[in-house]
Length: 243
Image 1 (cartoon, rainbow, N blue to C red):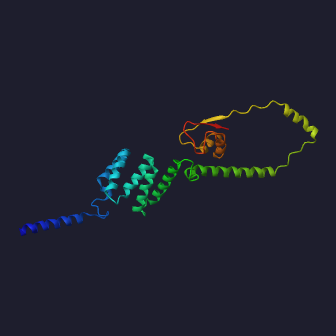
Image 2 (image 1 turned 180 degrees about the vertical axis):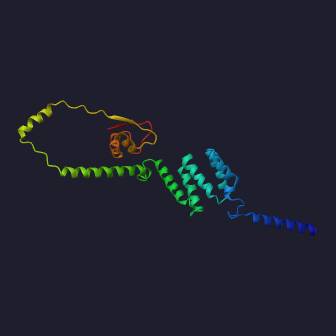
Image 3 (image 1 turned 90 degrees about the vertical axis):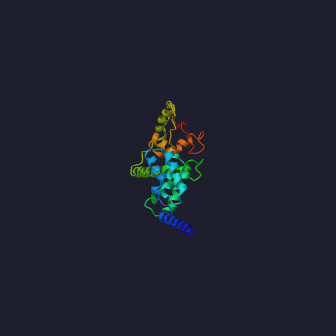
């Protein structure tokens, strides 16, 4: 009986020693994250562009272990680019930064979080963040306005350097011209154009397409207030009046 107890004790000691030596440097896990079967499966599925299945594989890694930054990173990218769920993407990107704040990829992940925030803002009605979702368009408008302002200053400076136009000799001499102008037939008003909204369009992009500048988006918006609640209320297939 004693020999049996000694044998059982030795077996338990060996098992304990094996478990202890099996724990690696990855927070108590025998395998590194990259060696996890589900992680390898997820990477293989990514190469085959089977995104939904890859998402499930990386989710299994995250569920099984606390230290899984690379799986969080891949999940963030899938949710952002494939699923189009910026909220879930931001969550996984932040989990990556919690686990690897000083990695070489941390800066790129921080930029991906900002991209996710912009994508989320575009889904909200009325642009509650005050242009947060359309910062790129706003910057384009600002650059265009600055360029037009610079050109206007040049035109004014050129006009100031020119002699003033000669005034009419008398009211009587100007009368025939005025009479002719009054009796001349009115020129027909140019017919308003129309534009059908395409996927990805903004008023700035439409302005650039029809006028060659993004700065005239306000004119298009004013001409279509009867169907636009705000400058971002564009719907694919909508017909806009182009003044």
